[in-house]
Each structure stands twice: as structure tokens, then as C-alpha cells.
Length: 640
Image (cartoon, rainbow, N blue to C red; front, top):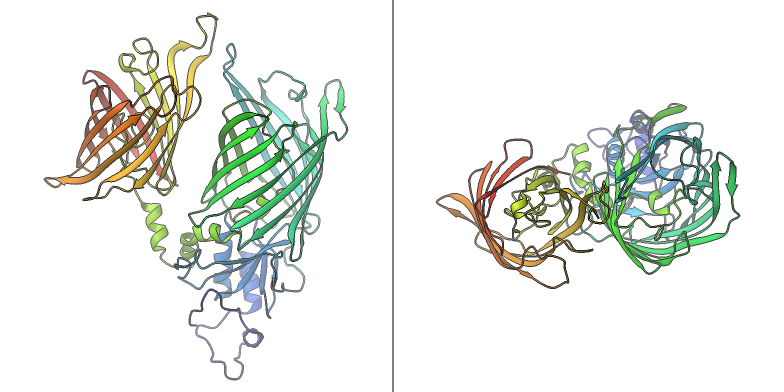
């Protein structure tokens, strides 16, 4: 059939009757190949592992399903689109409740310009929401249970006599969906390792005890909002109630989210159960914006945190297929904090469905890294999240998966495939950002590219405790956004123990944590120089700090790829040490794709370097600092 615009309407009643009768209505030309029947569509969805399936002809939504098998909503949508044989309106259910209605684009139109991938998303809170298919659900989830095997891992660093403390617990959790929109969780915590000392907030960490035991309920107020309620024991020694409301706007480009909690203390110690009444009030008002750039969410929340401190939380989150990475800053109780939130999928990537009891690892594992070990800036965890309920159900998220959508439909995803196959020519330097030896390049690492690296700087030219201790540098560098590079680095001062001058028995090896970022104002290209602005070690004591501007251009020298860069390090912020302090420059030749030679002046000394990339993203580096001291490093690069 001929393609329609992305604002076109689904099949008419006449067309559906023709589909059922396997004969065309008057004036309707038979299609070739023959459209699948309603029964065939239903069986295809059930065979694909979908649950809560309803397929009915008529106006509005024709197909509704729940996807607990595939990691991404866009994959489930592609399977539904392929089963239907044409573009339709499909409703994705979660916990048996309709979460959103999506119009799947015609084959090959998901990457169309002028809109977010050709996808259209509607929510029950939208005015003019289409009617849903009537009838019973096939493969309902209400009679099934899941035993999720999860884990809780926490750590603390920086103690003088106990440098690394680890808390690890196993949490088997029974999860039920007893009725539409409801989720019941019953868990138990089994300690595996417990280094944390007992304290008033967590007095029962060293024993088997109840885990989360709560009920969540989601529902829609038509034309208004998604609402949620939670009650029970939420974990982290908190029990109580929580209520919230959220309103997605403009296909999920915006999300207004409100939450209020009333909780008390609950612990299960060897001496008995300790508890308090519901004596703490917390909550927030939040706004999330999804700009039309990759799958990015910018969220701001203000409110009262769990332990009475008030302030705001600002987060920028990027989703790489099914990995969520967010950078956040907080102002809580007069204290400034920053950190990283990482949410990882847990294998298997295709989940089991259908049986009355499924035993499998928990779907996701979340980790938070904060620059200070404080109770400030913490909201109640373990309660119903409207944002999580709507995860991946926005125009921007679906458009970011356009390549996977077209691939499942047998189409060639031009832009998406190129993005995944792209190889970064910008190697990470010893400093943990892309560049030469110690100096930066005028561009940034490719979007979605991640490189983890290590470098050893000899004591003769170490930046911290120079002449006394080797500096060991561990870094991760990420193309967080197009034209935006971010980096985290841990600098270990080998052989030096923190506070050893006043505490000779200190066991804490001195480690400095730093965050860096660079923005490409102009992307360097042959014949046109680029310009980037960057900052290294942006916060804290700034022991390895640089603030700089750098320009550079790639070119060919006797048909050999080469590039030049020059920049200046400014003293814009107060710092303990300035690494790039004044003018710097570098040159590079790459006679072979896997070989490059470098020469640079890093505002302090001249150095020469050699880089090898033998296979599979492996990078090997060697440098003569000040043309005399050998420094070695290695890295591994992948595209997410």
C-alpha cells in the first residue's frame, strides 16, 4: 500500500471488516500481499512473548500489548508493526494499564526529517485520546509472578584506617501484578559482605531481614495526569506512604512531576524491631525537558529531601540504547554536591515471559557516585515513579531507536548504522581527555564513544608529589552528546598515604577524583580549523586543573594524515595547581591507520609520543616526557 504521512489515521472499519472476511469492500482494491487477519496478528504477538494482548478492529487503537520481554519499547513497536503489516495505532501497557499510544511510522520513514523520527505519541492525559480496543486480554499478567534476584552494593572510600568499605547484599524479591496498574513487592535482604559500622540510620545491616514490602498503584485521570500511590516498607529503613502525579506534554517532550511522602523509621535489629511514627515529610516538584537531540532528558527538581534539608536537584541524562548515564548537581541544606547516576541493564537482554512463576535477575542495576558521603540531597527510594513508568515512551526516545526499528523491519538505517559503526580518530591522552600526550585536541571524542584508559606518569614529571611518587591515572572518557566530551579521572599517588605526616599508620593511598568537560564550538575539518573550550578538574581542590581554549586542523602531508593544534591555558579559577598554564601546541603524523607519532609542548616541557592501535579498540601509548622520562599507557574504546 502507498505510504501515508505520520499524521494520517489508522485503518477504517470497512478495511478491518475486509481484513476479517478476507475479501475487499466495495470500491476497495485488494492489497498484495494479503493483509494478516486479526487472529494472525494476535498469535504473532503472543509468539513474540507479549502479554496483556488485545487486538480488535475499529476506529482508534487496534492493538494493545504489554512488553516485558524486550529491553526497548521501540523493538516491541517494530514487532507489532511487522505483525500488523502496516502503520497503525498501538497501545503499550505496563502493569496491565495503558501507558501510551504510539503511531508507528511507515516502513523506512522512521528517520524522516521534520519530526522526531516519524513517531507520534499520545497519553490518556491528552485531550482527544483515541478509544482503546475492547475485549479481554490474552496472556494476562495478573496470574503470574516474578522472582527477581537483585543485589544492593554500596561503598565508602577515604577512611584513614579502612580505605575501602563495601556493603553487598542479595535481595530476592517477589513481584506481582494482581490487578490493573498495581505492583506488589515482597523481598528479603541477605548480607554477603558488611564493612560498614552500625549507625543510628542503619542499625540492622549485619543480619537477614525483610526487604521492600510495598504496594504501588498507578492510574490515569483522563485528560489530566498520571497518578501513583505507594504504601508499605520501602527499604533503606523507611516505611510510610507516597503519592504523586505527572503530566506528559507534547509527545513526552515535557514532563511535569509532583510527589509527596510521609515516612517513618523501621529497622529489624537483633534486639527487636525499632520504628517511629510517620514523622518525616518530603517531596518535590519537577520539570523534565527532552530536547530534540539524541535521547536526552534535562530535569530540575526542587523540594524537601528525606532528612529535612531543602534545595534543588539538576540532572542531565543521556540514554545509550538501554544504558542511562546522568550527571547531576545539588544544592541541599546549604551544601553543594555533584555526582553521577548510572542505570545498567542486567542480562539476559531478552527476558522470559509467559510462565506462572519466572525466576531471573532483576532487570536493572542502579549506581550513584557522589562527591561527598552525606545524607543531604536524598529523596525517598523504593516508591512508585511516574517517570520510570513512562520510560522510553516519548517521541525523542523512540526516534533515538529509529535505526533499531528499521533494522527489525528489514530496512537499512542509514544515519543510525553509520553512527554505531563510527570509529573515533580522537585518541584519549594521558590526561583522560582526547588529545596528544598531555595537550588537548581542537575536537571532541565521537558521540556515543567510550574509552577507558590508564597511564603511568613517572615521579620525575608527576604533577602531584613530583620527584617523590609516581602518578597512576585511571580515566573514562565519553562522547556524552554531539560536540560534548566528558571525562572522569582517578589520580592515584602511588606510595603516598594520605595524612601520613600526622598519622604514620595511615593505610589510605592518596587518590584524587576529578571531572573534565570539553565543548567543540567549531568542528575541525580539512581546510577549516576547529575551536574547543575545556576545563579539567572543575571542582574541589583542583590539584590537576586546566581551563583552556584550543584550535587545530587536520591536513595531509605528502598524503600522510596529520594534524596541528595550538591553545592557551587560562587562570580563570583559583586552583592548587595549573597543568596547562599559558601557551601550548602539538603536531601529529599517522603514516598508518594503526600508528601515530606526536610531538608537543604542554606549556612546561617538550615531549614525544607513539600510539598503536593493533585491534578491537585497544590503544597502546608511550611517551618521553621532557624527551627523557618514559611514560606508558593503554586504553580500550567502544561505541555504545
